[in-house]
Length: 166
Ligand code: FES
Ligand code: FES
Image (tube, rainbow, N blue to C red; front, side, top):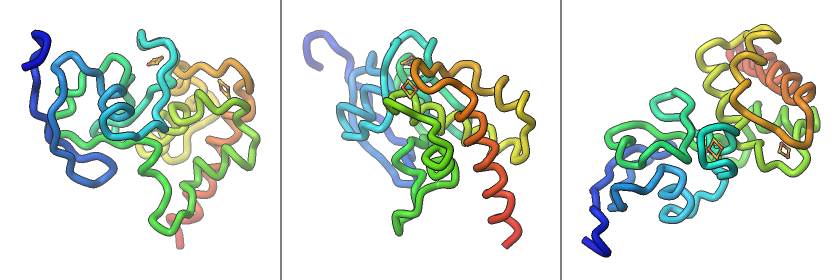
C-alpha cells in the first residue's frame, strides 16, 4: 500500500500471453498497458470515452481503455494493436489496408480505429458500408477524413475473405 492507494493483483491474457502483475486499483487499462507494460501503441487522447483512440478488445469486444479500470480485465483476454501482426512480421490485413488506402495522416487515431474494425470483422466478416460507418462512429479522426478509413476496412474484409478460402 502506497500513498493510500489500494494495490490489486492482476492476471489476464494479453495478446495471447499470460500477464501477472500488480497495479493501483484506480489505474486504467490504458495506463497499465502504456506505463507498466510498455505497449504504447494504444493511444490516449480525450480520456473521457469520446474519441476511441484508446480502443482495445476485451474478450473480443471493443472497450475504451482510458476509462476501463485495469482490474476489470482480470481473467479476460485483452488484445491490443501490438498483437495483430504475425510472428514473421506480416501485418494484419487491416493494418496493411490502412497503409494501402492512405487511411491515416498523424496516425494517432489509427490503433483505435483498427482495433474497433477488427471487432467488427471478427463478428461480421462482410459488413456493408453503412454497417462499417455505424460501428466506427465512436472513433474520431481529426485529420484523414473517414472515406479512406471506411475503404480500408472494406479492403481488409475482402482480403480476409480470400484468405479464409485458402
Ligand atoms: S482516449 Fe479513450 S475514448 Fe478518447
Ligand atoms: S490520422 Fe490523425 S487523428 Fe486520425
